[in-house]
Length: 457
Image 1 (tube, rainbow, N blue to C red):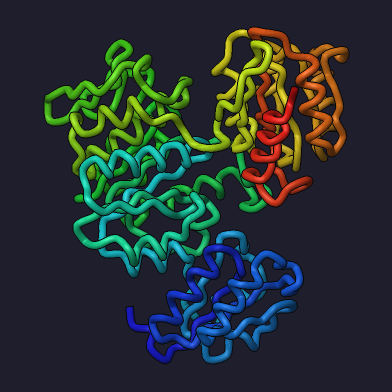
Image 2 (image 1 turned 90 degrees about the horizontal axis):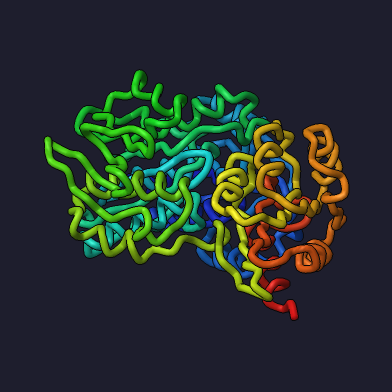
C-alpha cells in the first residue's frame, strides 16, 4: 500500500483514528486528523495528540469544512462517525476514496483474518477464538471492535500467523474490500437502529463483512437464527453452520451434551456443556461458533479442547464479582440491548435482583419484560431509561412494589440491591441499555459496579 506523499484525512479522533493516523504517517502520507469536537473535549488524550504532532500529523478540531478535502486522496473514517455526515458525503461527491480503519487493516495485513460479527456475543467469541488460534499458531493477533485497532494488529502478525477480528456494523458502513478468510455471524437482533435507520439497513451492514468472500473462503452462520440462516442466499463462500438445536452433518453442533464438529464425514468431539468453561446457553452457541471458525482456520479438535475447558469468559459479560451473605453478584455491563440482557437472565434459575436502565435505545421491551416477570424478584432501575422501563414493566404486569428507583446513582442501585437480595438469589447488573447517560462507556459502568460491590460490608 503506497501512500508516500499522498494526502490522507482521518475523520474521528478515537482509538481507531489515532491508529490510522500513526500508521498512514509512517507509510509516508501527509496526514490530517480531524474531529468535530474541540481539543478540550479530549482531556485524556493530550499525550496522544502530542505524539501525533511530533510525528507531523496535522490536527484540526471543531467545524469541519470541505476545504479539509482539498488534495486528499484517501479519507479514513472512525467507527463512531456516521457516513451520513456532510464531510464524508462531500468526499464521495468528489470521488475521493473513503475507507474504514478496518479496510486499512485489510490492505496492510499479511496473515489471514477470522472475523466475527453479530448483535451479541462478539467479544466473548472473538476472545475465545483468539485463544483457540493460539493453540495452533505461534503468532496470533486479536483486534477490531474489541478495543485494539485492527490496523495495528495487521502490521504485527506475520503471514504464517492468524488474526481474530471483532467487527461491528459501524465499522462496515464505509468498507468495500474487507475480505476475511473465515467470517462468522452469530445473531442479528434489533440494535443501533438510530444509527442505521432501520433493521434492514443494520442487517445489510452486518452482511457487508462477507460480501467480498469467494468460494475458497468460509462463512460460519448460526442455523438457529432465521435471519442469519437466510444469509446463505447472499453468500459466495463455503457456508458452514453451527447449531445448539439441530444435528448437523457438516458444522458445529451438540451431540447430546457434547460439543461436536462434523467435517468430511467424521465427527470430532470437543467437550460437554458441563466441561465448557463459560456457562449459559448463549455461551454454548459462542463456543460452537468459535470452535468452528478455529477449525476452519487450521486448529485441530485435540488442540482446542483444553482451551474450551479453561476459558472463563470476558470482563463485563456475566462476570462473577463476589459472593456476600450467600448472594452472588454478577457484572453484565456489556448487555447494552434487551436481547443480550435476556440471555443473562436465562443463565440464572434461583431468582434475580436485576439492575437495569441507562441510555435508552428505545427498542421494544416486550420479550425482555416477559423474562423479567419470570425470573426477577426485584427490579432496580437507574439512569435515563428508568421512566420508560418502569411504565412498560407496569403495563406488562410486573408488580409495582418490586420496582425500585435509584435515579442516576449506581451507588444507590447497588445499596438497594444489597438490601433486597437473599441467598440463593443473585444480584445482576444487566442494563439492556447503553451507558452514555452516566458513563463514557459500558466498561466504565461495569468497573464502577464491581468497585461498589467489592466495598459492600
